[in-house]
Image (cartoon, helix red, strand yellow):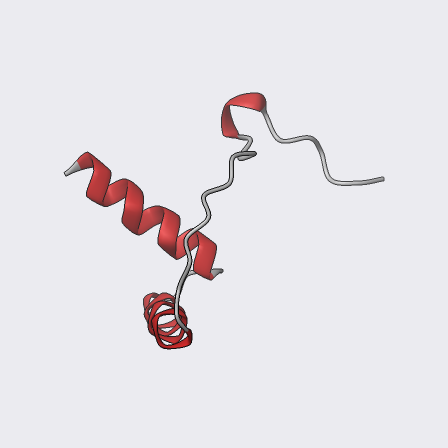
Length: 54
């Protein structure tokens, strides 16, 4: 048995590509770790969505 399917309204299937330098990537990864998020992707999504709502 696998994981149950994700409901369509919660499914994330779009990709956003952002090119970074090594230093920029390290900065973002460090910020995500400090914030305690599960992944860098989760942290970036949270920050971008909060900025978009502001």
